[in-house]
Length: 465
Image (cartoon, rainbow, N blue to C red):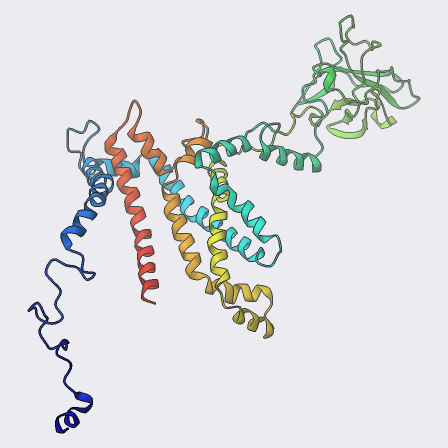
């Protein structure tokens, strides 16, 4: 009784148990793991055996190439002599490589920012619409296409010919909607015609015109199929009293048999041709040819020289040279944004779905409009997700190669050059210099390391929360 009462709550434990201060049953000190075992009880030798294949592959495919590239970057083109820092000096003195560095800087700034901004806009705007899921599917679909296929697609989109390139077809259509196109781009007179070149692409009559004497303005160089659909057979203009009249026509008879400077029965009038009367360098009157080619100018045109302005003969507008030296880099960046905006949208939409709705509703109740809610609450709370997307895309664009190699034609590939493409061009080919190629690879590694460091710090910070 005395023993039990004295023990109470602090009674001696049963014989088959032991406290943390007691020695373990196998004689080891308490709290110590068996030697050669990890926290989970796995033997370190067994763990090392399982990790060995992965470590060997990592060393062979990652570590060794990095070390050898650094070593090779200090050797000459043949790889037999020490070049020192000459290969690295070439990176900043060679115009082609400097263009690649400049374009890479443009890519890093523009492409991730544009993709992230579009992804944010799409994610926010599709949050409240019923068909938002379908829209997200369409926007994300380009991610299923390889870079090679996307490059081929946009090479066709940016084709210079409006009948083949979608971008130019749209641009030409918009341009022609607001700007009148020329009627007869390749029309011109023959030496026997009473019309000669007037400079600047225009044509003028060889002699001043007189009232009451019909004027002939014959031209050639227009295919009959390209004539206006409502053009009519040309007619001789009636002689007006004090007015100057005349006929402008296509002096060509299909099948032959026509006579120069004579209006034959099968020849068509140049409908819509603009005619100006010029005196002392000033336009005193103007007219437009009718469907049969006839036109009439007021009496002020008497004694003037008739001019056919260059606007009648300008070449048709063929759009923009999207793959020319000036626009090739923005054009390729546009194709990249088309592919990766869906990736940014999906990640941002996932972050947006996790935002506390009570904060957004409280802001609206307090009188904030949608723009203020977006700018002051949504964007700051999405900052971690936006950082993830931005950093991921920055790492991705530093090694962009496929799109530039496929889309940029040979004539402007040097203007669209990036470091990854220059690495390929310097390392392979007839005049390959593996020393410079290795130096470019090391430069790319150094450019990626700061971005990776920021990403690792962010991941660790997230892990400590």
